[in-house]
Length: 94
Image 1 (cartoon, rainbow, N blue to C red):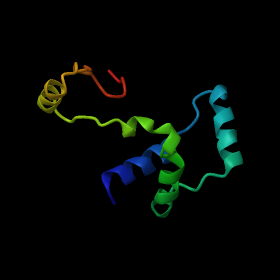
Image 2 (cartoon, helix red, strand yellow):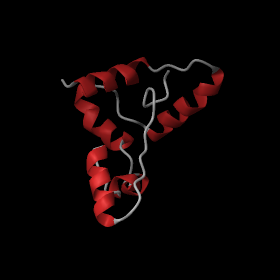
Image 3 (cartoon, rainbow, N blue to C red):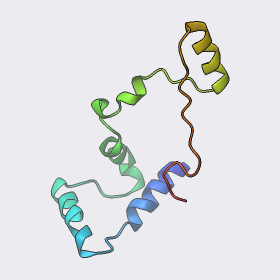
């Protein structure tokens, strides 16, 4: 089992409501009848969790993976370079 699959099973299996306000989403989840959390249902969970094509339009942007390649491409095109950087955990957990 891959690390992602183990993590997904662990997260989904241990998720529990902390307050009365969090009960409502659990009731909605029951109404949609989500698949049980198990190794053999990971494909169903991936399909449920993965964004739809209209929700992932950022993937259509031709991202350049390295700063150096971006500098060269912007110089060749005569266009400015947008350098997007961040400091810290990608999920904002600091």
